[in-house]
Image (cartoon, rainbow, N blue to C red; front, side, top):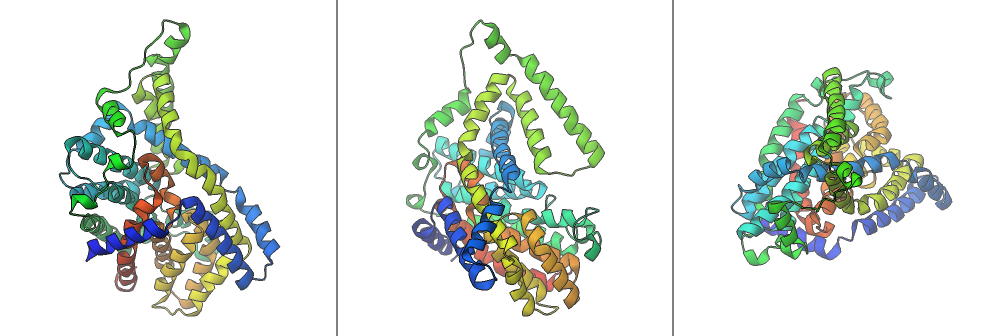
Length: 452
């Protein structure tokens, strides 16, 4: 039954899921229409809100490009390749491969969402390559979907935006709720139970989606044109002729790479010693960057790796401004307050966490940024929780779960993974959507039954 469900959504996505850029444009038009209908904004007002928000994610866009290219460069080093190859050698079937990729992606995403995204993508590609080498049928689209599952659990992990923000002194809602330690959110009984259940059952669910007939599988060589080159490069590495010139000697200097790399890693050690295990995009990118420089051994090797990795950034560069514009319309028109208000109006003390989850899941489709969504929806969630006498920590985690779960429908965060794997959104989103609909009931059950 689960396999048939996955096949159905896969066919649906292949037929109806457009390129992520078209998806962003359609959401732009829809947000404009909803803003005109449900708020006191004219069409031109919505245009202005769109423009006001359009460039607000430039820093974030650069961070995402860096996490893609530095993660890619790090993964192409000899040492990391051996680790990934070791794991990639384990699966003997496409079901086992999807289980492994999903498990690794979830563990990495609980540590940091950006780490989970890159690790999941690289694992999916490498496992598929090893399957190709060994003649084991591997369904590459399902492996890609498995690598993306980490984005469905991240907000309950160590990099969860809302729980970390409310635990930080001076956050923008401190007057209303004070500071809430992570012991009441990320390490609450609710989140621990939910986290363990997701870690156990999501890989099993992904495995059940695997096709059994090799005729139904799409191997990696049907997606990528350069599979044989990738296999050869993995086995032999890249050899480049060195010229006996000063420029060539500098480009291939191990001393230069080690010197700058060691300086960078000293800063990384200092950061974690003084701040603890507080991960964010900047420190992840910084660590990836200088670890990659050291492991690639020479400056020119790292330049080549970065050059290759930047090929996957096109979608991020093009689409992030449009999603930023959508966020601007939602925020400045007041539409997000209206949507959240609908759910508050029909809630009581028992159902409020459920409707918070549902509203957050809906808003995430238009505002696919956990931190951005908390900034605009958080005040509404807190005020309603206060009025209904509902636990603040439980309300925060309900929003976090809703925000993360519809990432399985929204291809925004899949752009980096698609760039690395070479897959199309329509090839992975059907499987992701099947998991989303099945897991939806689990979250509703958890928010009613499990203690805050």
